[in-house]
Length: 441
Image (cartoon, rainbow, N blue to C red; front, side, top):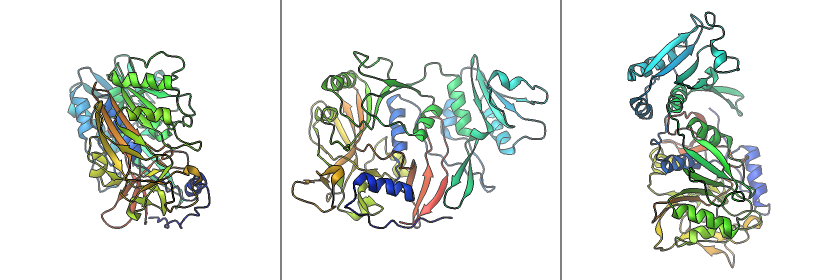
């Protein structure tokens, strides 16, 4: 097992972005559980199945069991589903065979059929033009189907520190997702805003959304007069420039009309986003200029006071994190202060310590010490809003926690020492989560 040394105290004379890039280039240590939180938000917004964080261990000492998410999907089946198991005689994978047997035993609507490519050499061609390895699957119902490659069941990851490979098993997640897909005609619609220098969605989040059977659409507010009615959720992810007042009014109308809005946006290199943040003012939430710096060593990570480790409040969004002893890391966040409002109910999800303050110098900060003009905390850096109309907003005030130098991992406190780093898992239809290494901090 590999260990990562505790980083040295950064040079505060260097720009914040340079320090963050250096951190990512050296060990990729700036990590966040907010990926899971984002996925949970989307699930809750579209009234999807409850998210469950499930570990699949392919060691010989572990047996696989069907999770509650799979049972919910399978027990709700009203249409017949066929799972074609493409495998040559004598090449059957015992684990996959065991798992397929459990699916077949759960529902009379599920039938597993073997297709030996030596006997049916062209069978797979009607479903995919890829090369089909042994123990691949096709899940079909009516005229809908999904091909699952063996390589999507057994997932390999490279450990950059030991130059070795680790393998995880995601058979249940892949099969349940496919079943859910082939029996669902009207898939949840997620609209991602574009046109303001937004960052690209992290691939690990995009891949999970696809696996969760969300249809992801782009949305330009320049070409519409209102948010499309079919939008189950609108996501604003890391804009680098502010929205116009007219566009913000469209978003405001969407929320007050019952829409669901999820935002990940914080201080940019060019300053704040006052028009976008005016949405929060409708609910008594004000934002502080600059970047939040923590004064409590237990509330920041890696010796960098702007890599926040906020307190996590209990909620439907965050409970799965706290139950699994995960922390959320929020680098380069904008501070939010929750006041009173008659327009809705605001709940702080992630909060700093009382000793936090906002450095008004923003990306140009040269010291972590509090200076004249800096703004006292505490602050919220994640919150949820329930509009009186039934509309909802979930807001994370960091744009940088998933950028290219931030590896999409979780930070989880172990019962012993150190933290376990694990890749994204969980969702509507199950998933996988496997440890990479332990970092002593």
